[in-house]
Image: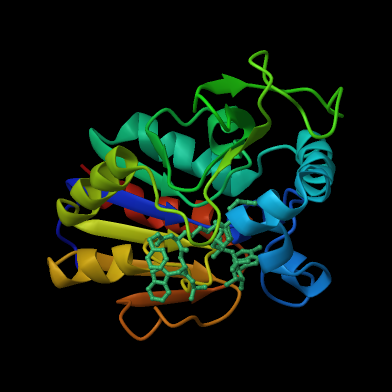
Length: 238
Ligand code: BJW
Protein backbone atom coordinates (compact mmCIF):
# COMPACT_ATOMS: atom_id res chain seq x y z
CA UNK A 1 0.00 0.00 0.00
CA UNK A 2 1.27 3.47 -0.81
CA UNK A 3 1.93 5.90 2.03
CA UNK A 4 0.07 8.80 0.40
CA UNK A 5 -3.01 10.07 2.28
CA UNK A 6 -6.44 9.03 1.12
CA UNK A 7 -8.75 12.04 0.78
CA UNK A 8 -11.85 10.33 -0.46
CA UNK A 9 -13.19 6.86 0.24
CA UNK A 10 -15.92 4.82 -1.39
CA UNK A 11 -17.00 1.45 -0.01
CA UNK A 12 -19.09 -1.18 -1.76
CA UNK A 13 -20.62 -3.84 0.44
CA UNK A 14 -22.47 -7.04 -0.32
CA UNK A 15 -24.20 -9.82 1.56
CA UNK A 16 -20.90 -11.13 2.99
CA UNK A 17 -20.59 -8.18 5.37
CA UNK A 18 -23.80 -9.25 7.11
CA UNK A 19 -22.98 -12.96 7.08
CA UNK A 20 -21.38 -12.86 10.51
CA UNK A 21 -24.50 -11.15 11.84
CA UNK A 22 -26.44 -14.23 10.77
CA UNK A 23 -28.00 -12.90 7.55
CA UNK A 24 -27.70 -15.52 4.78
CA UNK A 25 -25.81 -14.61 1.60
CA UNK A 26 -27.25 -15.36 -1.83
CA UNK A 27 -24.55 -17.43 -3.48
CA UNK A 28 -22.13 -19.96 -2.05
CA UNK A 29 -22.55 -23.07 0.05
CA UNK A 30 -25.15 -21.80 2.52
CA UNK A 31 -26.53 -19.12 0.19
CA UNK A 32 -30.23 -18.49 -0.37
CA UNK A 33 -29.97 -19.48 -4.04
CA UNK A 34 -28.98 -23.01 -2.99
CA UNK A 35 -32.40 -23.42 -1.41
CA UNK A 36 -34.54 -21.11 -3.54
CA UNK A 37 -34.58 -20.29 -7.24
CA UNK A 38 -33.90 -16.60 -7.81
CA UNK A 39 -36.24 -16.43 -10.79
CA UNK A 40 -39.14 -17.81 -8.69
CA UNK A 41 -38.71 -15.20 -5.97
CA UNK A 42 -36.61 -12.18 -6.94
CA UNK A 43 -38.09 -11.11 -10.25
CA UNK A 44 -41.14 -9.00 -11.18
CA UNK A 45 -42.52 -12.01 -13.08
CA UNK A 46 -42.37 -14.16 -9.96
CA UNK A 47 -44.32 -11.51 -8.06
CA UNK A 48 -46.90 -11.24 -10.84
CA UNK A 49 -47.34 -15.02 -10.85
CA UNK A 50 -47.49 -15.61 -7.10
CA UNK A 51 -47.31 -12.56 -4.83
CA UNK A 52 -48.15 -14.67 -1.77
CA UNK A 53 -45.17 -16.98 -2.30
CA UNK A 54 -42.83 -14.03 -2.84
CA UNK A 55 -44.16 -12.21 0.22
CA UNK A 56 -43.89 -15.35 2.39
CA UNK A 57 -40.21 -15.49 1.48
CA UNK A 58 -39.67 -11.81 2.30
CA UNK A 59 -41.67 -12.12 5.52
CA UNK A 60 -39.38 -15.01 6.57
CA UNK A 61 -36.25 -13.01 5.70
CA UNK A 62 -37.53 -9.91 7.52
CA UNK A 63 -38.07 -12.00 10.65
CA UNK A 64 -34.57 -13.41 10.36
CA UNK A 65 -32.95 -10.00 9.79
CA UNK A 66 -34.91 -8.46 12.68
CA UNK A 67 -33.20 -10.90 15.00
CA UNK A 68 -29.70 -10.00 13.71
CA UNK A 69 -27.45 -7.22 14.97
CA UNK A 70 -24.74 -5.27 13.12
CA UNK A 71 -21.24 -6.73 13.53
CA UNK A 72 -17.73 -5.29 13.85
CA UNK A 73 -17.48 -4.71 10.09
CA UNK A 74 -20.63 -2.55 10.07
CA UNK A 75 -19.26 -0.69 13.13
CA UNK A 76 -15.94 -0.02 11.41
CA UNK A 77 -17.75 1.62 8.50
CA UNK A 78 -19.56 3.87 10.99
CA UNK A 79 -16.16 5.00 12.27
CA UNK A 80 -15.00 5.71 8.72
CA UNK A 81 -18.17 7.67 8.01
CA UNK A 82 -17.59 9.79 11.13
CA UNK A 83 -13.88 10.26 10.55
CA UNK A 84 -13.70 11.01 6.81
CA UNK A 85 -14.99 14.13 5.17
CA UNK A 86 -15.33 12.56 1.75
CA UNK A 87 -16.90 9.20 2.30
CA UNK A 88 -19.67 7.18 0.72
CA UNK A 89 -20.95 3.74 1.55
CA UNK A 90 -22.65 2.04 -1.36
CA UNK A 91 -24.43 -1.16 -0.40
CA UNK A 92 -26.20 -3.86 -2.33
CA UNK A 93 -27.75 -5.08 0.92
CA UNK A 94 -31.39 -4.54 1.73
CA UNK A 95 -31.10 -5.53 5.41
CA UNK A 96 -30.65 -1.99 6.79
CA UNK A 97 -27.85 -3.13 9.12
CA UNK A 98 -25.53 -0.29 8.05
CA UNK A 99 -28.07 2.28 9.19
CA UNK A 100 -28.83 0.31 12.35
CA UNK A 101 -25.11 0.39 13.15
CA UNK A 102 -25.12 4.19 12.72
CA UNK A 103 -23.82 4.81 9.19
CA UNK A 104 -25.26 8.02 7.78
CA UNK A 105 -23.96 8.31 4.25
CA UNK A 106 -25.40 5.15 2.72
CA UNK A 107 -26.64 4.51 -0.82
CA UNK A 108 -28.84 1.43 -1.04
CA UNK A 109 -28.56 0.22 -4.62
CA UNK A 110 -31.06 -2.63 -4.27
CA UNK A 111 -33.55 -0.98 -1.94
CA UNK A 112 -34.54 -1.82 1.62
CA UNK A 113 -36.47 -4.79 2.94
CA UNK A 114 -38.11 -2.55 5.58
CA UNK A 115 -39.84 -0.48 2.92
CA UNK A 116 -42.87 -1.46 0.84
CA UNK A 117 -44.18 0.13 -2.34
CA UNK A 118 -47.68 0.44 -3.74
CA UNK A 119 -47.84 -1.40 -7.08
CA UNK A 120 -50.35 1.18 -8.39
CA UNK A 121 -49.21 4.53 -7.02
CA UNK A 122 -45.54 3.72 -6.42
CA UNK A 123 -45.70 5.37 -2.99
CA UNK A 124 -43.05 4.02 -0.62
CA UNK A 125 -43.85 3.30 3.05
CA UNK A 126 -41.76 2.17 5.99
CA UNK A 127 -43.03 -1.16 7.31
CA UNK A 128 -41.35 -2.95 10.21
CA UNK A 129 -44.10 -5.47 11.02
CA UNK A 130 -42.62 -8.87 11.91
CA UNK A 131 -44.46 -10.96 10.94
CA UNK A 132 -46.62 -9.06 8.46
CA UNK A 133 -50.26 -8.68 9.53
CA UNK A 134 -51.40 -9.85 6.13
CA UNK A 135 -49.64 -11.78 3.35
CA UNK A 136 -49.57 -10.39 0.72
CA UNK A 137 -49.99 -6.92 2.27
CA UNK A 138 -52.30 -4.43 0.58
CA UNK A 139 -52.23 -0.65 0.22
CA UNK A 140 -55.08 1.55 1.51
CA UNK A 141 -55.89 2.27 -2.17
CA UNK A 142 -56.73 -1.41 -2.64
CA UNK A 143 -53.65 -2.33 -4.70
CA UNK A 144 -50.98 -4.83 -3.68
CA UNK A 145 -47.87 -3.68 -1.87
CA UNK A 146 -44.51 -5.10 -2.94
CA UNK A 147 -41.10 -5.09 -1.24
CA UNK A 148 -39.22 -1.88 -2.12
CA UNK A 149 -36.22 -3.82 -3.42
CA UNK A 150 -34.68 -4.19 -6.87
CA UNK A 151 -35.32 -7.54 -8.51
CA UNK A 152 -33.48 -9.05 -11.47
CA UNK A 153 -34.52 -7.37 -14.70
CA UNK A 154 -35.52 -4.16 -12.93
CA UNK A 155 -33.58 -0.94 -13.22
CA UNK A 156 -31.93 0.64 -10.20
CA UNK A 157 -33.13 4.02 -8.98
CA UNK A 158 -31.29 6.43 -11.32
CA UNK A 159 -30.60 9.01 -8.61
CA UNK A 160 -29.10 6.44 -6.24
CA UNK A 161 -27.06 4.86 -9.02
CA UNK A 162 -25.91 8.30 -10.24
CA UNK A 163 -24.76 9.21 -6.72
CA UNK A 164 -22.89 5.89 -6.51
CA UNK A 165 -21.15 6.57 -9.84
CA UNK A 166 -20.12 10.03 -8.61
CA UNK A 167 -18.77 8.66 -5.33
CA UNK A 168 -16.81 5.96 -7.08
CA UNK A 169 -15.47 8.20 -9.84
CA UNK A 170 -14.22 10.73 -7.31
CA UNK A 171 -12.63 8.42 -4.74
CA UNK A 172 -8.97 7.66 -4.28
CA UNK A 173 -9.54 4.59 -2.09
CA UNK A 174 -12.21 2.01 -2.75
CA UNK A 175 -12.98 -0.87 -0.41
CA UNK A 176 -15.09 -3.76 -1.64
CA UNK A 177 -16.38 -5.97 1.13
CA UNK A 178 -18.27 -9.26 0.96
CA UNK A 179 -19.68 -9.26 -2.54
CA UNK A 180 -19.39 -11.95 -5.21
CA UNK A 181 -19.15 -9.05 -7.69
CA UNK A 182 -21.31 -10.72 -10.30
CA UNK A 183 -24.52 -8.69 -10.19
CA UNK A 184 -24.59 -5.67 -12.50
CA UNK A 185 -24.42 -2.73 -12.45
CA UNK A 186 -22.99 -2.81 -8.88
CA UNK A 187 -20.20 -5.18 -9.93
CA UNK A 188 -18.82 -2.57 -12.34
CA UNK A 189 -18.31 0.12 -9.71
CA UNK A 190 -14.92 -1.08 -8.39
CA UNK A 191 -13.41 -1.34 -11.89
CA UNK A 192 -14.70 2.16 -12.59
CA UNK A 193 -12.89 3.46 -9.51
CA UNK A 194 -9.72 1.60 -10.43
CA UNK A 195 -9.80 2.97 -13.99
CA UNK A 196 -9.96 6.49 -12.50
CA UNK A 197 -6.84 5.81 -10.46
CA UNK A 198 -8.28 4.71 -7.11
CA UNK A 199 -6.47 2.22 -4.88
CA UNK A 200 -8.68 -0.85 -4.66
CA UNK A 201 -8.86 -3.20 -1.68
CA UNK A 202 -11.12 -6.24 -1.60
CA UNK A 203 -12.10 -8.20 1.50
CA UNK A 204 -13.79 -11.53 0.90
CA UNK A 205 -13.59 -15.13 2.09
CA UNK A 206 -12.63 -16.11 -1.44
CA UNK A 207 -11.40 -14.62 -4.69
CA UNK A 208 -13.99 -13.05 -7.00
CA UNK A 209 -13.95 -11.81 -10.62
CA UNK A 210 -12.80 -8.49 -9.13
CA UNK A 211 -9.71 -9.88 -7.40
CA UNK A 212 -7.55 -9.60 -10.51
CA UNK A 213 -8.12 -5.80 -10.61
CA UNK A 214 -7.59 -5.19 -6.90
CA UNK A 215 -4.39 -3.69 -5.52
CA UNK A 216 -4.89 -5.78 -2.39
CA UNK A 217 -7.03 -8.83 -1.80
CA UNK A 218 -7.59 -9.68 1.84
CA UNK A 219 -8.93 -13.20 2.16
CA UNK A 220 -10.84 -13.48 5.41
CA UNK A 221 -14.03 -12.65 7.27
CA UNK A 222 -15.17 -9.03 7.06
CA UNK A 223 -15.87 -8.66 10.80
CA UNK A 224 -12.29 -9.65 11.51
CA UNK A 225 -10.43 -8.11 8.59
CA UNK A 226 -12.14 -4.73 8.19
CA UNK A 227 -11.36 -3.51 11.74
CA UNK A 228 -7.73 -4.61 11.21
CA UNK A 229 -7.56 -2.81 7.87
CA UNK A 230 -9.06 0.33 9.43
CA UNK A 231 -6.32 0.36 12.09
CA UNK A 232 -3.74 0.21 9.31
CA UNK A 233 -5.46 2.85 7.12
CA UNK A 234 -6.47 5.35 9.78
CA UNK A 235 -3.05 7.02 9.73
CA UNK A 236 -3.20 7.74 6.02
CA UNK A 237 -6.80 8.93 5.86
CA UNK A 238 -8.29 12.28 4.99
C1 BJW B 1 -17.87 -12.98 2.99
C2 BJW B 1 -18.26 -13.46 4.21
C3 BJW B 1 -17.64 -12.89 5.31
C4 BJW B 1 -19.38 -14.52 2.82
N1 BJW B 1 -16.71 -11.94 5.13
N2 BJW B 1 -16.95 -12.05 2.82
C5 BJW B 1 -24.84 -6.88 -17.66
C6 BJW B 1 -24.28 -8.12 -17.96
C7 BJW B 1 -24.94 -9.29 -17.59
C8 BJW B 1 -26.15 -9.26 -16.91
C9 BJW B 1 -26.68 -8.04 -16.61
C10 BJW B 1 -26.03 -6.88 -16.98
N3 BJW B 1 -26.77 -5.83 -16.54
C11 BJW B 1 -27.86 -6.30 -15.90
C12 BJW B 1 -27.82 -7.64 -15.95
C13 BJW B 1 -28.85 -8.54 -15.36
C14 BJW B 1 -28.72 -8.68 -13.87
C15 BJW B 1 -27.38 -9.30 -13.52
O1 BJW B 1 -26.45 -8.66 -13.10
N4 BJW B 1 -27.30 -10.61 -13.64
C16 BJW B 1 -26.05 -11.31 -13.32
C17 BJW B 1 -26.32 -12.28 -12.15
C18 BJW B 1 -25.54 -11.98 -14.55
N5 BJW B 1 -28.86 -7.38 -13.22
C19 BJW B 1 -30.05 -6.83 -13.02
O2 BJW B 1 -31.08 -7.37 -13.43
C20 BJW B 1 -30.08 -5.50 -12.33
N6 BJW B 1 -30.84 -4.58 -13.10
C21 BJW B 1 -30.34 -3.89 -14.13
O3 BJW B 1 -29.15 -3.87 -14.38
O4 BJW B 1 -31.28 -3.22 -14.88
C22 BJW B 1 -30.97 -2.88 -16.22
C23 BJW B 1 -30.95 -4.15 -17.07
C24 BJW B 1 -31.88 -5.16 -16.84
C25 BJW B 1 -31.83 -6.34 -17.59
C26 BJW B 1 -30.85 -6.49 -18.57
C27 BJW B 1 -29.92 -5.48 -18.78
C28 BJW B 1 -29.97 -4.28 -18.03
C29 BJW B 1 -30.79 -5.62 -10.99
C30 BJW B 1 -30.06 -6.49 -10.03
C31 BJW B 1 -30.90 -6.66 -8.78
C32 BJW B 1 -30.28 -7.66 -7.81
N7 BJW B 1 -31.24 -7.99 -6.80
C33 BJW B 1 -30.83 -8.85 -5.70
C34 BJW B 1 -32.06 -9.10 -4.80
C35 BJW B 1 -32.36 -7.83 -3.99
C36 BJW B 1 -33.58 -8.00 -3.15
C37 BJW B 1 -33.46 -9.06 -2.08
O5 BJW B 1 -32.51 -9.05 -1.27
O6 BJW B 1 -34.32 -9.90 -2.05
O7 BJW B 1 -29.78 -8.23 -4.96
S1 BJW B 1 -30.12 -10.41 -6.24
C38 BJW B 1 -28.88 -10.46 -4.97
O8 BJW B 1 -27.56 -10.34 -5.55
C39 BJW B 1 -29.11 -9.20 -4.13
C40 BJW B 1 -27.69 -8.78 -3.85
O9 BJW B 1 -27.66 -7.41 -3.48
C41 BJW B 1 -26.99 -9.09 -5.13
C42 BJW B 1 -25.50 -9.22 -5.01
O10 BJW B 1 -25.16 -10.27 -4.17
P1 BJW B 1 -23.92 -10.12 -3.18
O11 BJW B 1 -24.17 -9.07 -2.22
O12 BJW B 1 -22.67 -10.03 -3.97
O13 BJW B 1 -24.02 -11.51 -2.38
P2 BJW B 1 -23.48 -12.95 -2.79
O14 BJW B 1 -24.23 -13.93 -1.97
O15 BJW B 1 -23.51 -13.15 -4.26
O16 BJW B 1 -21.96 -12.93 -2.37
C43 BJW B 1 -21.56 -12.89 -1.03
C44 BJW B 1 -20.05 -12.76 -1.03
O17 BJW B 1 -19.64 -12.57 0.32
C45 BJW B 1 -19.33 -14.01 -1.55
O18 BJW B 1 -18.31 -13.61 -2.44
C46 BJW B 1 -18.71 -14.65 -0.28
O19 BJW B 1 -17.47 -15.27 -0.53
C47 BJW B 1 -18.54 -13.44 0.59
N8 BJW B 1 -18.62 -13.71 2.02
N9 BJW B 1 -19.24 -14.46 4.01
C48 BJW B 1 -16.40 -11.57 3.84
N10 BJW B 1 -17.94 -13.32 6.56
